[in-house]
Image (tube, rainbow over all chains, first blue to last red):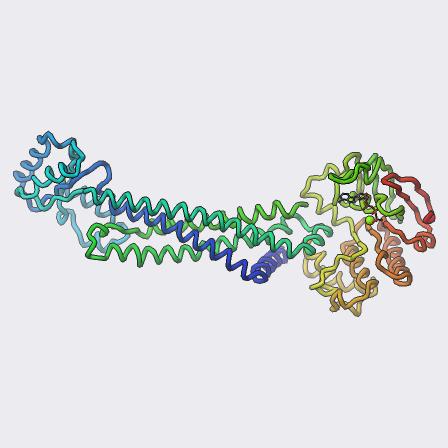
Length: 298
Length: 227
Ligand SMILES: Nc1ncnc2c1ncn2[C@@H]1O[C@H](COP(=O)(O)OP(=O)(O)OP(=O)(O)O)[C@@H](O)[C@H]1O
Ligand SMILES: [Mg+2]
């Protein structure tokens, strides 16, 4: 058995090295397609995080002062609840705000450590009956200068627009990357077909002397698997780069306040990386399995 | 050891006439059988059916008591481990030395290294190539190359040795050497089936002769002659 394993690895290694240009082509294609694929997933996560507080139909948020007294709070609550232009509203207490904060910064415990529930402002999330942007802004502005209110923030058309555009871009990336993934699977298939062709004589002799089918097939399958795995490895590196420099770069830029919330935490990044590795392996196996089953019949 | 019952073979997309037609034959353990007949009469087809390189269109084939038509595809390699094959064109791997070519046959069926290092030199000694172990096939004469291929076919001690015109590319003197070797292998109890056009060999060896003509067995003669 030990001999078999070392034989398999040796064969796989020689196959990879002998056709180094094909190997590089296959690995590059799969790296690029998986990097695009992974990045589009990350972009999705980032946009989802950035626009999270606008989900659920909330059109504007009235942020209270943490120091606002009960009378001020009651007045605001009353005017929101009694306004005919308001369809519904939710109160987010300091504890709830802190809970959300903890979820958003789950990977920065030092930040959570530094903040207490009492530091965070409570807020009202308001859905107006009329979603027209002008009406929403008009309505929201009424609360801006009332006592106890710190600020009013709108989920304006601009944010929705950004969300839409961002999703469009990440969808586009997704489709391009899927097309490239198909190209990579075909490239792996052809690489393996070439490898099988180059070893025709060896394979003929192996069959003749009674080598088992998996013994003949496995080195080729492994070759495809290695393509997929190495390609996915590079793609994962690229994804960490995208997160650390591109996405984090956006969220650090002071000029674009809208992009502040654009972030991808480590848990999401690891999750997406595992996806990319799994898909790389799957593409490698599918490509080589197809080559092997069509070109290596007993 | 080998038994054919009403075996016919037509190739897909081939000519209308069958390559082998309603063949019945029984070959015992340790027999030496010559297959003769004109070109295209079905000798190679007969041999390819025995190691399941081809499947019959009709009829049943038994090898060592087993109906090989019933064999599932993952078991075919195990059938082939009991059948050695040699050919007119040797089928040696040019990038491997003589010893590596023989060792390859054991490696790929998972024999341990200790067995390989013992058996390869022994079999090369037997076929008379002890001094050529590190040569490459291109550095050998045709006769020497055929000895390597015999060593490879026999190193696993198969029950049956199939030979498709093993002397087809060799001069008469060299052929005699190869036949001596096959005869020796046959004397160890190995069943040998050999397709040949070589009248001289068949007439001097005087073994069982099976003659094919257009896919039909037309003669089956003990201690027979070429014609
Ligand atoms: N793979 C194949 N596909 C189609 N027809 C084939 C195939 N192999 C052999 N045949 C046909 O089957 C018949 C028998 O061929 P076979 O090779 O068995 O003859 P043979 O006796 O070995 O001839 P030779 O002495 O020339 O080697 C021939 O008519 C041949 O054309
Ligand atoms: Mg022939």
